[in-house]
Image (cartoon, rainbow, N blue to C red; front, side, top):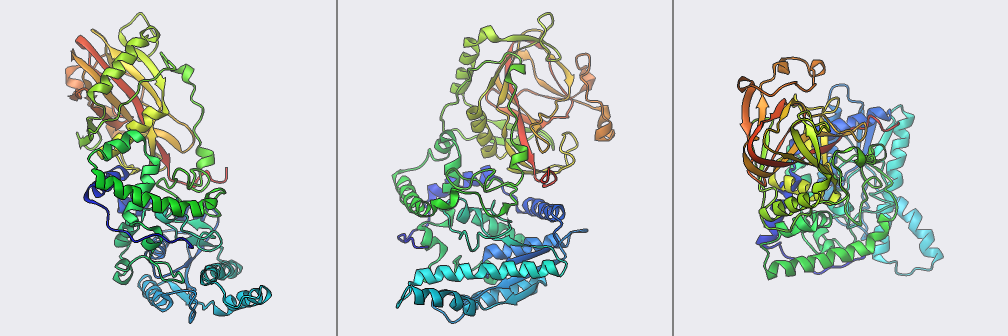
Length: 583
């Protein structure tokens, strides 16, 4: 890259604290990621009738992780992957590329460990056959080192594609698997459109560099690779971080900064001092300089299919559904029929910027409590919003159906993407759930897929107001479906006001737990829960929340005195699958 940034230092202690909070929100689990990713890769290969993978191995951490994932996927019973070829493409004895001999050595060690077929093709002759006539025609006496370094990268591409063609002719329908990670590709443009970006699929485009290391550790990538300083084979030998002008850890922070709400950013940086902001501004300038140089790469879709499990998109960089996530077109959210929701109002409450950090704890294997999800000022704001919209409140019965003749609850509904985004980020910040959830939970509608990506809180939010003698019968919640692979799986209840006697959320014994999920009857019960029906009751303090699977039998205890107000919505997920790719 013909971009030069000044040297950098390690990030400050406070910025590292912010990074820790961002990683809590990310909730990355390498074991779960590997399981979901190799399942998705095998599914994609089967869906497209493919049987072979070709990988350009540089001796670096990214190509090593990719090769390790493919190797593991191929060992799964009935995997369609029958052949893996790793290729090293050095430009030996030139000044246009660096670290070539070392790269071959590391790649050879790696392939030996995984027992993968490995070939080395020196690209010098091809390089000279391309450069010589052009240099002569343009009368170049002293060819530019940078331009020649670019040609080294471009020259490798046809070697890889010809290899896939030969394999296909031999009966192994094959693809090139790319090795670009999120930190390098999603915003900085540290990827060549006609070189390492010219591949059939990108396998780790949803991973930060730190996560590549976590995955590599689980895959037992050799120490010679994991301990090396990340660097391309650029003509001038610069490391990746010298190109960026910032550490990889800061790149991870900055990409998340680009995506999260101002509300959440203020919360996770409220403890910064002047030196922290100064360092942020310095590194931001360096990264924006690199982005500006490469921004043309984001004006068109990626050449490759991105087999993303986690979100890889970044504002002004990779675009959701264009550069990432193969199934976006078929999983796009439906238009929400807001007029069907009881007590719907166009107005919505606002959430304040505050420094309080939420936390979470497990009640049991299924139910999670989130403390300090919203603060006192926000509760007051929500109650004021309710009072302003009092004329739109609708009475429902104990089944949640519009009915002014029976006690149940009074309801208002609003639709707010901004409100939902902030609540989603706070839930992630609390550590209550992860961006990737692998479900084996019996009490929700996850089948037939078990790997799901959290996409956020459903922005269709309901306020439920219980007064004296109001209650909700024992019932099961159901999924809100946006598409074949996008649905809600978990219920979210946020406590706004608990100024009452009674009104707890009751979790009940369920005689159907012994039945197969498909054989259970999820109809509402016809009467209040009896004391012997109750397993346990929870009454979250104001501003806190409960998260639990939809198909857990629960009820709203009768309010004996006072008033109970909650917000009720769902957590939305997207299945990690290629099942509907061809439809």
